[in-house]
Image: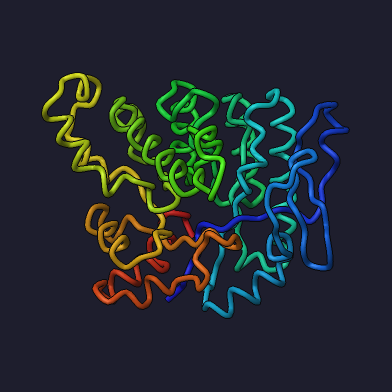
Length: 330
């Protein structure tokens, strides 16, 4: 059985000074503090402590072997997206980080794979860059769940998703730039409360707007962190759809019937949550994802699935690897 962790992140060890390059402030950069450790900075503010697994392929392979992971799929840490910057600058960043991610994978390209990023505020440029990246060796694309106030049902973002569908490019949607930040300054509440809400908002935007009716069923799209609040709240959404015409205005079918249009990862961290997730989504719609190598990720990758007391062995095989083999065209 091939075991695939499809949700992990990278940061290059070093990259050009973007603040100097573009003449503006608060760009991300790496402040190396000691051997194998660094602080990801945003301008002069500390954003996140990290270690060499983010940039060192050999370290990743060593830690994958400890957890019996055969393949790990990396994607950019969302702070690199640059969606709020001028589109040309974001495009240059996408090209830069896409090429650097392939360099990390070059340590062992059979076991280390990567997803591209794109300048999502410019749909034409995004379509060009994702096609270039896949041609160069990326196996899909990661996008943020919104661009400014535009959710995934925005006409331009739907156009990009349809482009990915037409070229069989898998899409991972990752929450970022979380809502309500001014009310959540402490305790990592943005990650614990707003991040799951962002993901549910993305899924519901595609369902209730009718976007899934307009996008080809060939689209392969997966939502990180177990789809956020979706599985727990879909009963509430179905009830609202039945009772209120303003909810079903653009959504011709019961919202829960759209679970066959998307996937989620398994990063939910409790037996009860994973049981609910597979009950709602089906075991063929859940992919092993860890959020490695960050502290909020699964610390022993795959343990939740492997040791789950209720999941059948066939379900575990699907989640641990079979579903990702199909989703990512491996």
